[in-house]
Length: 493
Ligand code: NAP
Figure 1 (tube, rainbow, N blue to C red):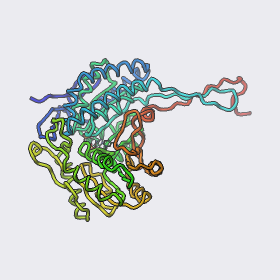
Figure 2: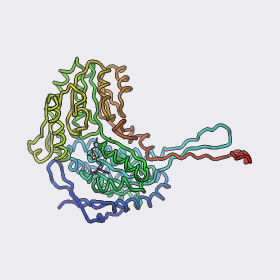
Figure 3: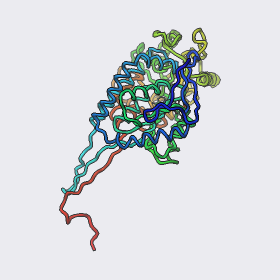
Figure 4: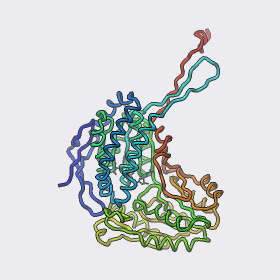
């Protein structure tokens, strides 16, 4: 018997109005994990009504109270970390070592960090010319926030959005991806036990096309925080324009460039590139998937890269020594394989990988070997489009200016990486990259304490850090006249 989960609305576990449900499977072995209620428009309406009603009181609570509740939720989360670590691995197909080291600790840290940070938010007094008005700016919650997230880091991304939103006095409707919804559903149990009032957090499992879409067009949601593909990001903006002009935060796709200068520490750089495109099977928005290697070190770099890639351990995702897990589903496997086949037809040289990995127990999942494609043309589809699998292109360059030009030749602008021992070159690169996050002599390192987000078609706005929390607050300008009574602006007549 698999577990059954309902929708979490107004602190109650309820069936979907239409009575429908769906099954979430473990992509690494195809086993069904849980049955979840499938929300539709009516359930979205119910959740929004609950969130709106709760918003009246919740927006007026003080930061200490909100932080106290979040810290209680954190305590429960920590007690349940083992169970959450397992669910997150099984529902996404990623190795348990990643959920243990990244997903659950990051989610816990988001709860702690944002609940404390929210208490420190303050307005400002604006000096005006003359002495007759006190002008001050204050920050207020938007009201009802809709959070729509993808399947690659469910709890991490959920907490990155709902913790700043709730800590600053907003109420939330969270929709996890129907491909990995379990850990987010468990957040309902955690928030309920922590003592949150009804309606502050509502959690809906359901499809993007119905549940997600109903949120996007809902006239009573004030802000949508969306993390996912650029395609649906566009839809979010359009739906906002067509409904109530709700604020839209977008964390979208990427195609991260990676530059290795001739003077870089080669072994470390190779290692960081592998982390960049193999962590989470390459299903990471900020993955380093376009490597530009200086011609002086190209052969040695690529040789080491291929040897290391061929040694990456794939296998049972619950084995802590497994390094690469399963892609999320068969569709994604076919998408990745299709990109690689077309790249080879387009003239790319396949240096390693390029096929499904089927040695048991991986034969029941959607495992794909780490793949490196050598290219000479930056305009190829495999260089320009997000593949979302463990696939990286490598290309030779002769001078840093050329590498930076190639790196910026993309519609995306999320993460960008450079390895060099020359601090002037690092500085030059960090100024030149058109991206939201720059890594110098490290890679794909992101902390909840700093901003995260992209330029160009990688997104709008930022999550994380002080910049991220402020996205969930709107500024109010208060002008208080304190001058003499006969000195108002007035029409002379
Ligand atoms: P996706 O297809 O855009 O889905 C993301 C979320 O949107 C899911 O919850 C999905 O629901 C929902 N959705 C789908 N269609 C919708 C619609 N018409 N209206 C409202 N919601 C809708 O993306 P994905 O395949 O899950 O995730 C991979 C993408 O996310 C990649 O492009 C990756 O780069 C990006 N990503 C970005 C970041 C970042 O921080 N920048 C982080 C992680 C991932 P269902 O899944 O239930 O259909």
